[in-house]
Length: 459
Image 1 (spheres, helix red, strand yellow):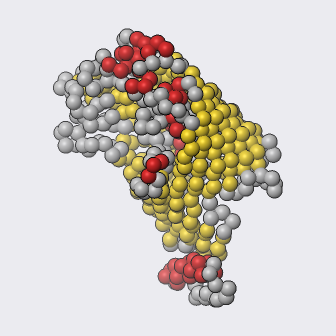
Image 2 (tube, helix red, strand yellow; image 1 turned 30 degrees about the horizontal axis):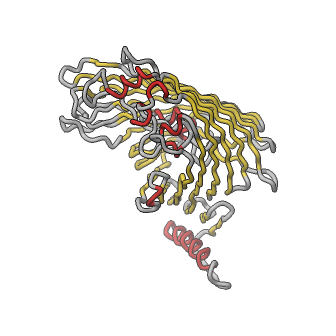
Image 3 (cartoon, one colour; image 1 turned 120 degrees about the vertical axis):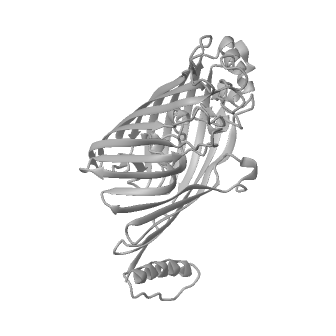
């Protein structure tokens, strides 16, 4: 019976394929009926829910224009650019009801504009088992459980780029991991993971893994009404002998084309050529969100604490720290509400309710501070205001327009010299930044403005 159900699903997929090139034909099955949906991508599933196959993807085409500090981030180049930010094919499905899989292939993600498609990579690939209800377990490459905006898909965030907080998190994006999770009492979720950070083994031959988790509480998650709280923790668990690991605080401050190989990135360089290495790297995050009808508010705060130690003695050298927050509000002018998936603790698409689509206003303020713990250097502070207008044309097409006003404090000549020279560590063991920024000296721009646009098709 199970095999018949699987055959029925494949028969349905074959039927849909054949129908595109033939005017007549009949496909029959001795198993359950197959339902085919094409309103958003292609999906075929048996009516009993045991088997499902879905084909999807996303195309994101961006155009940016920027001035001031954004140009210095790009070593003095003009930051105005066009690019395919993401081009991705996605497959996901279910077999025997409890086994789920997802596979995402990046055709390119904006990192190789000259050779688009030449370096296809696996963006996401995992297998999940849900037979232990209400818990599940998964293995593969997926997102590390940390942060409301980071967990939310790039297709569903309200601004074109994620906040600076995501730039500064040690496990942002997708990595190899083993994860467990579940939900309780129709309002709590939990998610924990053991993460392979793909760092080189340490000098003593050991392999270190990061670990962390996220819990959410949403006592209200009805249509048009959401109240959400979350807490997350992540420990990168560095080994002082793991000399090959670099920790990069890299931010483009909302403009992806502001980096051509090197945005402003104070980097804690621990490349094995110095006697100092990262010995501690822990991050804590708080999150909250509120939705009532067409209005939504959300915010997050994070704090990341590190320690650089002497490899020989284990003694602390410096204790760098990064912390920051953002506050974001949205207003859907046409009356729709942001969709929310409480079991995942994240937001989903805005679903247009009329023929002319849905229109949304967005405003976000964010601030992040980086303290290098170097006595002769001041803190670096990044502040960014983003104003946006989104048009959800239909289920598949979205157009976004963002205006960004950025400010970076602490770029005085003395501070730059300390950062660039790695004075506190010697050799390659300290913080550095790209030459284009340090060369500005006392005349370096501390602010900049940008206009970014996106045309998005997802299915």
